[in-house]
Each structure stands twice: as C-alpha cells, then as structure tokens.
Image (cartoon, rainbow, N blue to C red):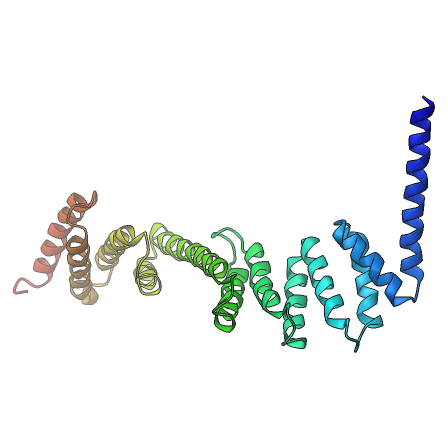
Length: 268
C-alpha cells in the first residue's frame, strides 16, 4: 500500500513539474526555452501543447536562421493535428518563403498530400481532389528525381480514378433521369478525358442507349440524323466488344434503329 502511495506521489510530482515547465515556457519570452519545450512536446506527439508555442516562436525567430525550422515544425504540427487545409497552406507558404531549404521538397509533396487526405468520396464535390492532383503534379514536375515521385504518381492515379468514377456516375445519372442529350455528351466526355477507362464497355453501351432514346424522343426534323448517330454508336460498340454480354441487346436495338431510319427515309 505504501509503495502504491509512493508511486502516485512521485507521479504527481513529475506531472506538476512537467506542467510547470510548460506554463513557464508559455509565459516566457526566452525563445530558446520555448523552442526546446516545443520540440520536446512535438517529439512526444503532444501537438496540442506544442502548437501555441510554435505559434509564438514564429514571431520570436522571424528573420533569424531558425525561422525556417520553426515554420516547418509549425506546418507539421498542423498536419498531425489533422487540420489538413491549414497545414497545406503553411507547407505551401514555407516552400515559397524558403525555396532553397532542405525541407522545401517535402513541403511541396505535403501540400498535395494534405489535399489528397481531404478528397471525399466520388459522389461529393471534388474541389480538393483537383487541388491535390494539381499540387502533386507540381511536385512531380519540380522534383522528377525525388524518392517521393512514385508515391506522388500513385496518389495522382488514385485521385484521377475517383474523378473518372464521378464523371461516369454523372453520365449515368443523366441517362436515368431521361436527360438523353446531356447523357450522350457526358459519356463522350468520359471517353475523351479517360481513354483507358476501365468502364469503357459500359460507357459505350449506355452511350448507345442514350443516343437511341434521344433520337426516339426527338422532333421529326431531328429524328433521322440522330438515329444515324445512334447507329454509328452501335457499330463502334460492336466493333470493340463483339462478345460483350450486351451484344444480343444491342443487335436487337440495331434492328430497331434500321427500321426507324427506313421509316423516316425509305431511300436511305
């Protein structure tokens, strides 16, 4: 029992001492003391406590040789506090303010990585996805020999895949809501923007369906030309995917298209 009491007594003394040291650092104008305590807290992953100290140090070390080191710690602390937007801002500002610093390369990478962490699922707004791609690409352009280049390219590929899904889902939404002209345009955009898309077969299939339904719901003066365009979409699909699971469906659709074209212009 006495051993246990002694343990808690010693622990209380240590905690009070640590707390006293922190409060002393917070109130002190001694930049070196504040800096050492801030670094110790950072290394102990006590980022909430380290952050206000580094915030003070930005002013205390402004214009000195330690200014860059303090600012990088400040950006890192924001990152580990999971305030990724603020961290991205500080990383970018660090890179611009200290272009020749040894940490500048990593700072450029971290800007993109912070935005990557903010990139949401495909159904949501993708503003941060675009920011992440742009900043990771900037990093890749600036540091083509970096050991982080592979990581940056992998993140870019992952982000572009997310945008690809977003574009495909948007096109399907137009189709499902009977906005067939918008659907045709959207499916074409997917093919143009992502020529190697893994959804290519589905994109071509739904584009054909959308083109057919657009033609079928058009005014008389536009029907013939639009049915011809849907026939072109059919030929492109079957040429690329003759053994598709959709093949039978599109062949039946083709018969309807031919009949429609013939009925609109028997001599075509």
